[in-house]
Length: 303
Image (cartoon, rainbow, N blue to C red; front, side):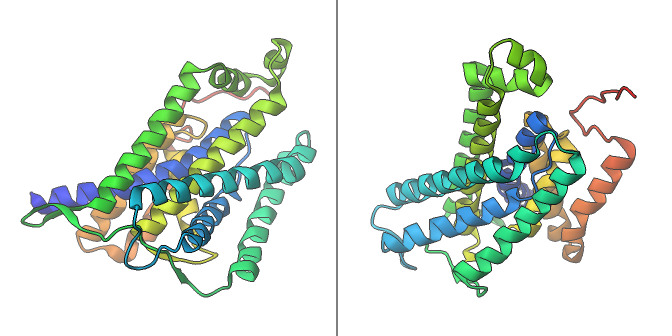
């Protein structure tokens, strides 16, 4: 039983990271019907932003003098950098193509993704870097085969807090209400006095800020970072968004946790070579048997 509980904790900890990244995909798709493939590389930029800020603060392998304060500063900086990058991408890459065919926008998203990846290799170097550690990893709970570390608890606490804050923002604020309105209809929302451009910008900012937070959390748990680190987690997060029902925010949260749990079970019970292929097998099955996802509703398209 301890082994099973250990796999559950590990899977949920990884799954919440996928959920944070998946929220960016699902929010942008819900507003623009656009799959922002550059989102995974914004996650990478968040990790490198945190790396350079941590280095500037003088944090090394031995940890920080004020770990929680330094972690908060590093994470907030990474979130702001990613939000600023999202603002640039939306303004110069996506907004001019707002009324263009979807294929044009999709190709542009892939192009922005590749640009960020290879620009990252030029700016940061292609060699992996070790992310400074804020505190030493220690088990908080140790009972037989069950070991829950402080990093896992912190990852869970921060990820769940950010998701809860997003849920409250979407459902309890005027801007959140406007976002839900725009996701239903551009035309009606603009007639009701909602600034559609403003809401689209806010959506990009929030989704990318969450990706920046995920980049720092992943780097704390798995300290090796490099410019292509966002490719695989980004694809898995996209699968999580599709699994939950892309455009459905709670669905993205649950989809990420489901992917994380299934991956951990595959690894824990001796099939680790299938770990990365699992997400794509799930994507194929979802598209074949429930294209709207677990929580999404099928909307007939008028022809």
